[in-house]
Image (cartoon, rainbow, N blue to C red; front, side, top):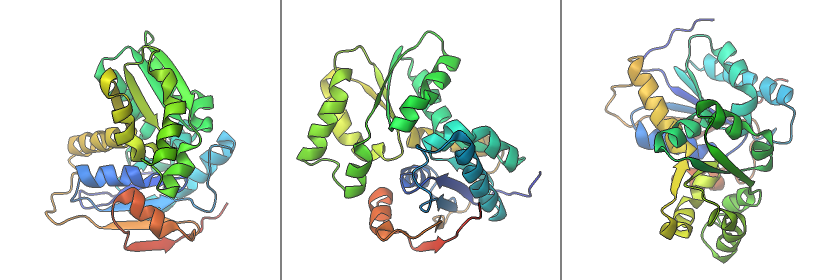
Length: 273
């Protein structure tokens, strides 16, 4: 299916919930003149415990909704959906480019030139082996060391990213990476950029490179749109519109934490199974 898109069309970003707002923020910082439409599937979060078939179905529904909003690009901000639904979303998108955080994180890790790569993510992402597969396809000689850090998601949503509880939790999760030869660490969950500063400080003396998939996918989006002559040359700040499939009570509070500002336009849009 082909869709009429122009440089003025918005960028579509979706996630299983709220974590993908870190990707939206990275895209805003990189491309401040672009209009962005964000969809958070708050009614059906989390995706990590669902089958690939279900994640693929949900992701395709959201992609079709975003296409209906006239987007010129779709960014899959959810790591689980990136692993399970990338091809399905591409098929639904036709000529609209689709990017995902796993490919972006992999590209940044390869670009770093490091040979031993650490990956932290949710249980779902780590057990899927999605980063391992993606990294090994890019460079079979890499050594990859992964660790699930499930407690970081609720801590991020509580706003506990640099207090004593957060720092002790990070120490428990990250201590294996201090002496196992890891040279770069991929933050393989959209919530984890909120811990970027304490993680950098934790590894300060090691000189470990921290790879933020949100920043990586924003840079990839800029390059892709530039190559397609689809960068918006508008000089005004872009509009940000947010859709959720169910309005969680704390959405505004959490969104402000993840975005760094309060989202003005938040709409509830329930998708049909």
